[in-house]
Length: 113
Image 1 (cartoon, rainbow, N blue to C red):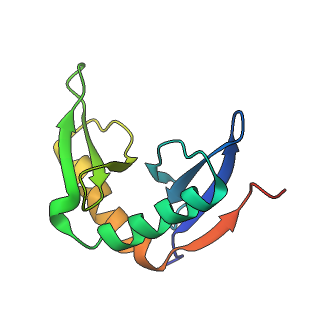
Image 2: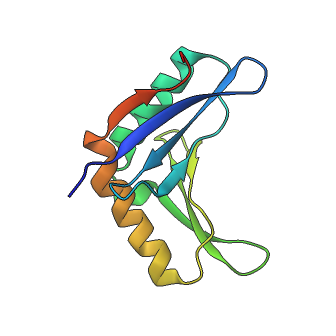
């Protein structure tokens, strides 16, 4: 199975975002916007650390009733959000995928290109 990958992108006026992709290249987590490259790298490390802690995944539901999750840091700050899922089972699979992929995912820094 192909390993997951973080992709770091510039996002607008001097800010940065990253996504975590599963081995099948599907986005499984999207970050908040970070003011600096260094802060975004810190966010990636925070995802690596917190993805291994089941209690850091907060299961939610959109206004349209679609399940999704956010990953929180130890201080309660949201560091990433999933897509909207069509079922709770799909959301749970997404959580497992983040937990499985994040700790060892390589980093592809697209902000320098």
